[in-house]
Image (cartoon, rainbow, N blue to C red; front, top):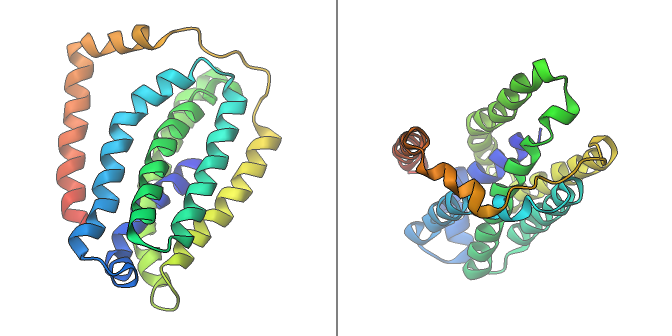
Length: 212
């Protein structure tokens, strides 16, 4: 459910670019930065922010990130102008990148070891579901109401999800002991570099076309 709401937040702008551009009095090209800036910050922030936050207790960190994610969507929903909207999307990208990474560390705590891989696969499946339904949903919304309603929907779901996380996430877990430099050493592995490069190229080609 977390990955679905994160994915919906990421993709929802794609279906409402013209509506946002018209409402905020900017061009479609400028509005496209809401997607490209989000993607750049997300990709760069995911390893760096997550590595930094890994020194803190996961339970409090994930709840704090979820709270900030909700506030970021409130800011998008109420954005009075384009600069505020762009800043809110950049903020959301930074928070989302760390939130999904930190949440996956709970997989061994919420499921038996033999089901850990299945839990992680379902987390990624949430993004695929969001990409399939997120854009059509946003386009459906703007036929009857403002584009801001799409973000209002994300806010409501985020609040419900935050309450569920408070209740069901395990609280007794120790933060990882690895520091940032120890984790960045992984980038020396050619296999990891090749895998990441393939994902970047495939994602870039797919979503550049998907956006416009």
